[in-house]
Image (cartoon, rainbow, N blue to C red; front, top):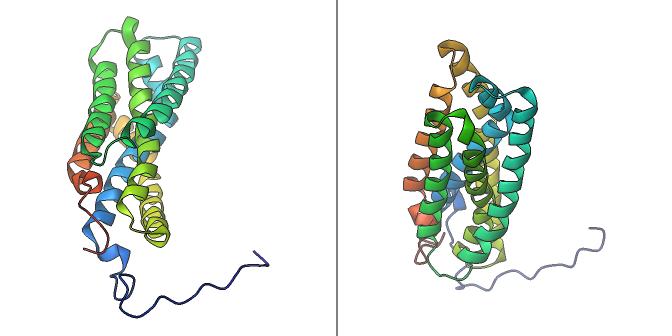
Length: 211
């Protein structure tokens, strides 16, 4: 940092000149919707999954095991998603599949008997891990140069983490109001699916912040 080299000013007439602020572009907001929704689901699940499992009938030790399995699933999804997504120019299928895998895991926790909860915990972890890793590919593919990539990543993470910070508190409030985890898990599923629908621009190879 002490020896930062001076950067030359962009030449007049280049694509960088006259570029709109990243917050004024649809693709930036689409990226933010995907990252924000996925991170909200991740932080909320990480905070409350043991309580969800205990209320489903599992013991505290089994709930702790479920939390560990969730993290193993996150690691697997986080490794596989960017490897697969980077091979294609269009990442819209990966966005959709990620949201559907997460929603399937949440649905399994809601509807399945306690005996199969661990299976759905792993499924949910894979989806959440993919949702945390995939934005890195999206930022790199949608940005035209390193400055755009930085701007997209900064906006998506700043807004996304602020949104995600509300997730555990909202889930707790819903649980307190209803006495079950049905409403919080349903909220997460709806948030993920709406986020995926709003994220299609983020996966389209034709989209760039200059538009």
